[in-house]
Image (cartoon, rainbow over all chains, first blue to last red; front, side, top):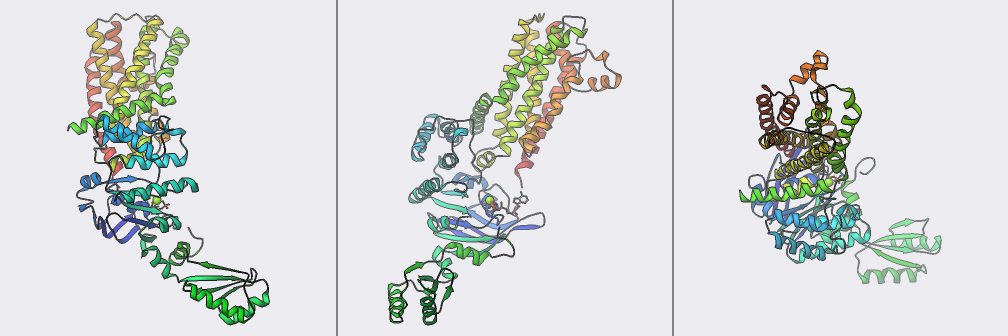
Length: 307
Length: 252
Ligand SMILES: Nc1ncnc2c1ncn2[C@@H]1O[C@H](COP(=O)(O)OP(=O)(O)OP(=O)(O)O)[C@@H](O)[C@H]1O
Ligand SMILES: [Mg+2]
């Protein structure tokens, strides 16, 4: 396990922000920490990346103790924080070269590396423009590129796509998948369920500083139940007939009957055969897998308005 | 050790670049000094009797006034880094992140050197006629350098403490104000006695008196020693304060 935490606790004043977190991340995998605002995602990332001291817990990154061997941990990680850490008054290239110099690459190598990363993150045209003229997506890409100058083993990404439009988000996802292909371990946080689903091997759902669920995306979905078939009818009569035969949940307004399913073609066939015999053939059939949204709501449901 | 120096060099280069490109900083370090100079010489100067050409009297004061502007810029630049993601990026890297302060302080010295050169150049054009020998010029430059270094570290400390750029800017207010409560623009014996008290017991008055004496031959008396003591003391204290405030800021 390249990242390990057990019994991680952190309180600010009398409020426990992290209340006993245990987690493990396998080398080369993508781990997503999912949670609403204030769940403790940023705090977890800051502690694991040596910026904030934990109150308690045994924490290791690449075998190094995060508290006692912070300098060694810093040598193998990189952090892309929740807010872009780029200099607006420097150009993209200057920002990258600066990081390269701080990583002691030497002048020529720092320039080469900057050039490589600009190309990889599709910033060549904007390379010599000041970053303050960049769009949000470009800034975020440069921010990630700056974290990759030294080819770290573990990358911490705090909400890498928050505030990005769908196209920029896709570019970011591709960049993250590329990193995984080179064997880099990714520890990311997100509020987007779809993002965790698409990118992560393992997901941990955090709420108010506590782990409410963890596992693969599929395992989490299984927790809230299996697939569902939505059958839409053209008449209330047909809907009624179908509901008597199949049970399930009726939406009278949209004339839709939802029935549980195991997701197989056999089940679909038997449902349709049954309805044909009863002379209540649906006009449309759609199959739904539970989304992480369902998981999220089921697991982190709270009184009042969701955060 | 050599890495620490290399890291500081990188951060110095960065701070100089940022300062050069920041319009506000440029105005504070070039335009403002020139305007203050013209204002004092052409507008107020005629009404103030200093026993000599006013321009000869006021140049050291303008230089010190500019160090205040420079310090305010420095405090703001440091606060910007401490309150953006930049400090987190630097701290998560295997470097001594304190280099970010060293970078800003050194850039501050460079900016002040530039402002001072501009002020002195403009002063010559406006009729400034110093009587200093080379040694006196060097001594004046050395004392100013020491004072600016001290003030820059103080500014860096304020910036490290400030929770926003605006907060850093208002905290630097006293550095802009102090020169007016000194012998920078009017001889202190024209001031009410409580102001004379303030004026005598703050670092700017002895520094100005010494620089003025070195450049234009007015009597220095014991002011030279006092100015040196203030500057060295301030430097030691400022550096310690900046280090402590930075440490405190990055532990949570
Ligand atoms: N330095 C601090 N001092 C006091 N409270 C803090 C501090 N940092 C975080 N908190 C509190 O800890 C809780 C968790 O914050 P954290 O930033 O880790 O949440 P998050 O999951 O990253 O939220 P978001 O999605 O909004 O980024 C919040 O209630 C926050 O107010
Ligand atoms: Mg956060």
